[in-house]
Length: 120
Figure 1 (tube, one colour):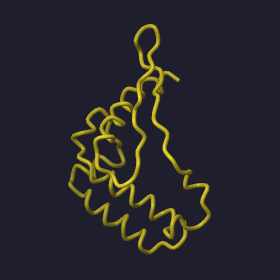
Figure 2 (spheres, rainbow, N blue to C red):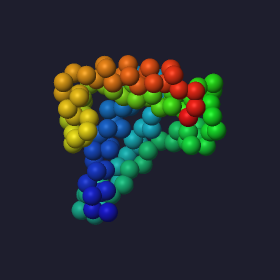
Figure 3 (cartoon, rainbow, N blue to C red):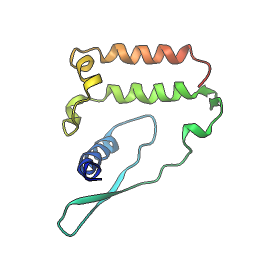
């Protein structure tokens, strides 16, 4: 529980930045943070997005596999400048490839995998 509360300010900052991005899909917007009597953030209120989780779809989503939809979102996210997310701790399994500049290789790889995947 304590760890979750520590992550809320970082999640709020991420939502603020994503709201400014020109992404090709909707992202929730931060309405406000909720604080306790000591001023510590203990909750977030976010906007609701239309739609349904991909797990509710059998097979294709608008003629595309679920993998293609996820790959498209991942490609957009990987294009965002890392410098805008300094509030997030680096992830051990992704920090090294990004630091070496192989981000574009990962985007192409994900896109190619989606091109060859017919099932979710």
